Image 1 (spheres, each protein chain N blue to C red):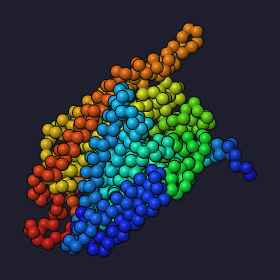
Image 2 (image 1 turned 135 degrees about the vertical axis):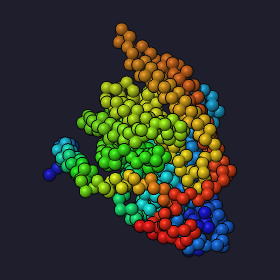
Image 3 (image 1 turned 120 degrees about the vertical axis):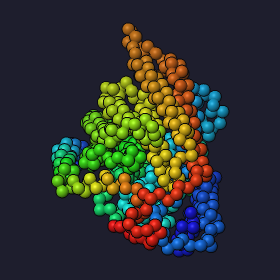
Image 4 (image 1 turned 45 degrees about the vertical axis):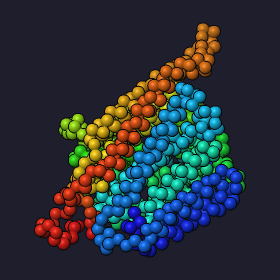
Length: 551
Length: 56
């Protein structure tokens, strides 16, 4: 890793890490016994530990002169490792919290392990830890290949990747201590949020500069999606997290938004986090790794452009459907509902485009579990976008809101779409990135596939059942006009579904562990592929003759 | 002039709509502009060529 950096770059890295170390000391001093002080210690250990790693390799030989003639894949490799580590952590926390709902004793009577503190470690762990690292890793890979240019920086990709993981660490460790802004998917407090702004702006600049260096005249559509993801997440994050800390020595802050405006800003953020974090970036993966894995160009490039702009411009307005029947003005609710329904058009355009790309190559889908991951992801993308549009309609929402149906919908998207496309992309990426002939065990990819399918279906079906049952029980009246069921009645009725849900989640977690093992063994045990002819530009010269890649 | 709730609603319901329609026309024109055809066809094929080095 450090060997790829020149001495000057190693010095820059050290300067940055020392700054982080000093910031950690300042936080620890200002915070004292407040959770902010604990986080200061975490930050200084993070900066100091990485600085030690750089110093250990400081005097190793510098990289060779031909560095610019290769893509820069070290950050992607580390990013994939981090993706898998967060997947296992985040999904384990999910299984634990799911099991707590069925068996509340699993909180073990401790403060840090109550449901309220563990739940955000699951959501942050899977969305930001697993999803975010996968997005960063694949975006670095895809932007280089589609632009035919090396990343426009040596230290900045590391800064983005590791800085983002520091944010995730601060967020997750904070929840255990009770640190939270109480904003869904934006629980991390002000200092972590400020840090993420710095990291994200660096990411944006790095991505733009890499695209500016491109040798391919047209910017491939996957990069548009990645750009939309980076730009919009920056805007959302900044606006939703505007807050004033109680003091610089305390973790607690208060948002500047008040009342229903706060709710609107939060769900404008929350829904666009789904749109631009969990959809746009993963559609970028789809538009690159699906054609590459299937070895077929995307069915219609024009359609991909139309659906890109459709998704980008419709999603922005859909957030208010989270606030039906609230103090939010009725016309704003209508606006969110209408745009949510319209969103079906660009969403299904993307899903249809992907399925039509596979049309004519179904034997590949049958034979290749990796391609099947991508195929199932597309099917679930189509299903959950339809479901989302449907749930956003106000009368439907009257039945579904606050029930497990919402949880089922989210997981149809998060497991069926996001995790499936991520694993499909990783299985496509890993052998080529580490120059391996194949995965360590294709059979284990099959095992993972069926565990994941079974886990997702069990999860989603149990939540559909329990959600609709819950919704119906809450709105059933007796002949006298009183509610027929108490809340506790509905809770008892949920019990079997909660057990089924925890079991489905467990299967999905087992699949992720199988994937991590298989990928680890691929890197460790599978022999390197002989330099494939396809990897080298065809120059028409004898092998070994000096060649300049063609423009 | 006072900028109150009704002003914003009026603005969103009129100019918001026009801006969306104008924008969607621009996107459709761009996607179907005849001279862009070759550029798009190249873009979707070029990612499959398996060349794993940056171009110099």
